[in-house]
Image (tube, rainbow, N blue to C red; front, side, top):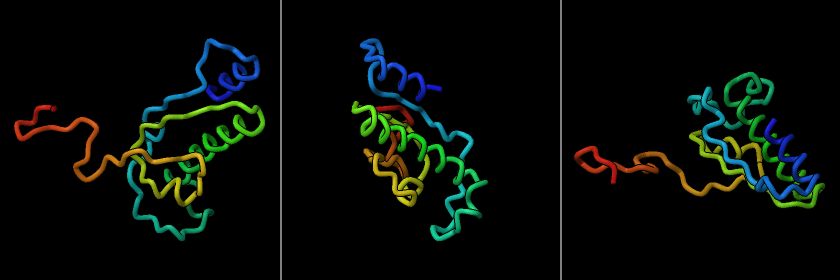
Length: 118
């Protein structure tokens, strides 16, 4: 729905909606399954959580390509996510760029020894 609304506003050259979308953890139902091997055939993956989030990320990637190439406009999607980078690396999503990996103690909000944020 949000992609469709953005396309409409881009087509109408609306100045009221900036050309970006922020998504916070769109894969919330996805949790784990990192043990699935990279060479697993797509037919065995498509109904898993990993397969479903890969399809969603492909949709977002394709939308950016569509807006850039067909509508001749700039568009950016910022995704705050916990899925492994291997999902978009394996799917070869050219519009995805990892800014920071928050794993193994690296956190957006860090805590000191007294468990207080700093």
